[in-house]
Amino acid sequence: MKGRKNLISNILLLICIAVFLGSGGVLAYKIVGQKKNDGRLEDLSSLVDNELEADSTNETEEKAGGNESRSQENNGAKVQAMREARVKAYQKIKEENGDLVGWIKIEGTKIDYPVLQTPDNPNFYLKHDFDKNPSSYGAPYVAEECDLSADCKNIIVYGHHMKNGSMFAGLEDYLDQEFQKAHPVIQFDTLKEYGDYQVMGIFSMSAVEQANPLYDWITAGTEEAFNEYVAYVRQHSVYATGVDAEWGDHLLSLITCEYTHKDGRLIVVAKKVEE
Image (cartoon, rainbow, N blue to C red; front, side, top):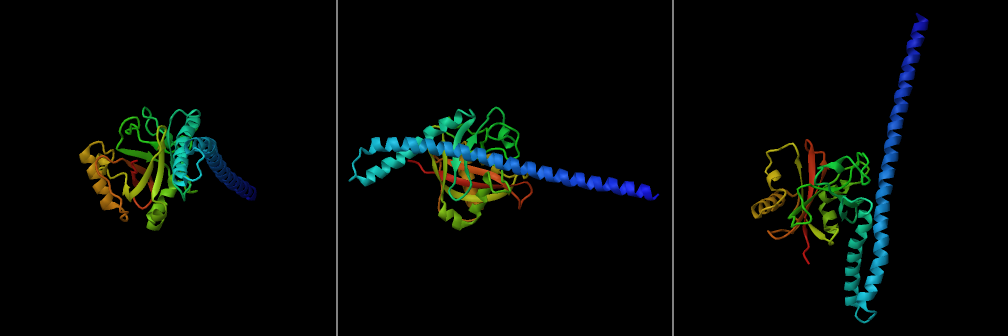
């Protein structure tokens, strides 16, 4: 009997050790995956920055013409050159993944990422990284309904809310109005043009409430739908930003998970600064 008890105790001990080692292995795997994903995205961002630095310097010199007395014109030329160089640099990233359609960047957050789209394979990047490998991190991607080659009135971009603060976790910062005041502009560039968007509103909702009229408006493809979406954002935003929109404007809606609702979504809406 004593020998049997010892055997059972040893088996239970081995099971506990196996569970412990298994848990540790899973944790280590997640940490390695996290660092690999973050490192890959940082490399892509650095590639854009390096191309930008090289191209913008050359274009600025050409446009400014070396006239030191015309400082305002020089500054304008520098900004323009940097923007054009950044759009040009995205072509380097597209060579690595043909699904690239843009780039999203928000100062004060970790959000500085390539944005992808697969119209014929919806939500592919929900569970795949930039290199198309299976990943719980996914990658920011544009909803299949949005045709960026046409006049898309509301560009919808999805991204995960990761616990380590990566992907679209930084959108949560906009719940604090002081953060919004300090970072009122979101940069979203396509492969053809740069874009600055002023934050218009932020709100949360449950994705399982299918009766919510927002689902009928969010693509904003008609004037009526656009106006209803803008009214909804204005009404449900956690605070007023002073930014409004009307038909003819272009919107950007960034969507991530949030945890105060069942299957909740946090949505930050911004209006494009037309130039």
